[in-house]
Length: 125
Image (tube, rainbow, N blue to C red):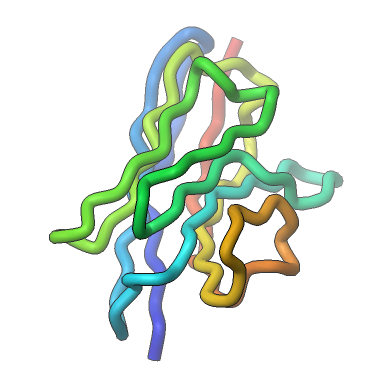
């Protein structure tokens, strides 16, 4: 059974930072790509960032480029998302996801096979 568990969400003021983490368990993730998505109330789930598990290649949404950093810790089976210079528009539930099928990093939720339960991030003005 594959499990993804997010942690690290919370309430922060605009301009502040948070570090989310996604812990993976259940099997080897050697060939998986990992993604972070977010969903605000009344909006569709949107892509935030993705990383290749093998070569560390990364990709970011334009809205977070330069502020967020995705990484991976192969030994610990975790995928952190460092979020700096947070804005109220970053407020959402953040989800991590695993893609086992594609060679190239994917930007759409339907391309991912496993999902965590989500963690709330709230950025106040």
